[in-house]
Length: 425
Image (spheres, rainbow, N blue to C red):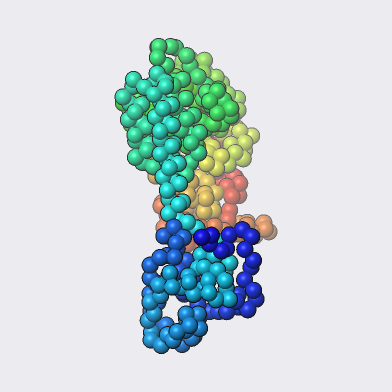
């Protein structure tokens, strides 16, 4: 028998809708909706309503055509279904709830469909893997099993897994080859987009997990380790688009690269270094050289204009991979660091990270420095910049955060350029 409420059923008339929508029945409909959605939309079982108030007892008595006088009522859904069919509603429980809205969801059917979709995904993946040279590689099957176990592909398009298998097949062919791929080139070959294997994408994570298993390596946890793992599979990541701004670096090496840096420093010129350059550059400065770190390029520009000679690295507002790679290399040779940045919450976050990673000392970044700059800006008539966002505590000065909150003014690094140049000279 067709349940009323399907497409083509007339809407509830105004009187029936008004009766069924009364507040005294809201708990009944909520409980019935939950039971139906869990039970394949079939009106079976019993629901129990407790702590009924007078309004609910009256509404239930009228609906069920029998008195409900106690604080608790047990209602068989088959009986409720039959009562609704015989009433002015003229339809069963499922159709009534559909008419009252919102639409019902057959959660059992949804679960079954999702399970069938997952089974199809993995059977398709197994078949795709078996049809490639990876079929004889134990690590490849371990990779697929691990992905399934961790639930990485839950609610993800199945094409991603197919593309991951295709990518690994290209990187691990049956015969040994010496082919080197650019990551963008490989991504275009597999996905049609040069960004398909960009860092952070699901496809890149799946492929890197496979490469790690193939080489018996640990899964990388940071960008430098991910690039190193790509290179193990003869894939060259993009190492030229991101740069770090430097000034005054005079490394001791004898190659043309170190010579070029020294000459640019002698001519008071800034230098942008790429990851590709940092991989081959010998960045050995004299022992215990103090390298200053700033956040904003304007400081570098001012230092060059003033003919300063102290080494200076600019983060450009973010501790990117190329910035950290340079600072790591300098730290490894025994350089010491001094850090200055913006007096706002993102600036303190970045300062905490750099100081914590390299043991850098604060460079005019104390509460007293902030108070001096804030007072000077006010006396100069500089319009105040509101301090907004999530507050951050400075790990190097417990008074800085409260002082900034009390003032409520953000100060960008440019406000301290003249003072910073005094130190850099």
